[in-house]
Image (tube, rainbow, N blue to C red):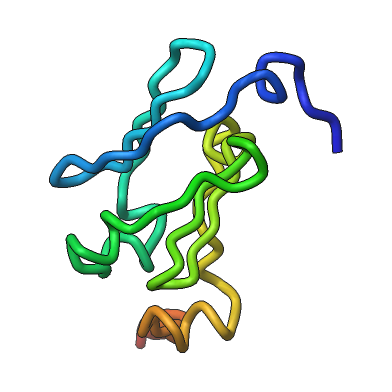
Length: 108
């Protein structure tokens, strides 16, 4: 995997939330805002759980110990959402895989 210089130079400084977004202040002056809907663990976490975060790897990521969530700054910059099609994600997040729609054969 290749990482651009811009991604590797950007480190997390602070984290906050709006009603619908995760917002991360970066060391290079940028601010990343991504939808909470991308990260079901954060979306469904309480305000207290969201508030307890830690910078990890000298700023390469953020960890929420109360919900066991880790996000990398490089992933946020790429726009990578949490996987939702994995069996463990469906169980953990309560997601159901819907059966494909069956089409009716038209009668003549």
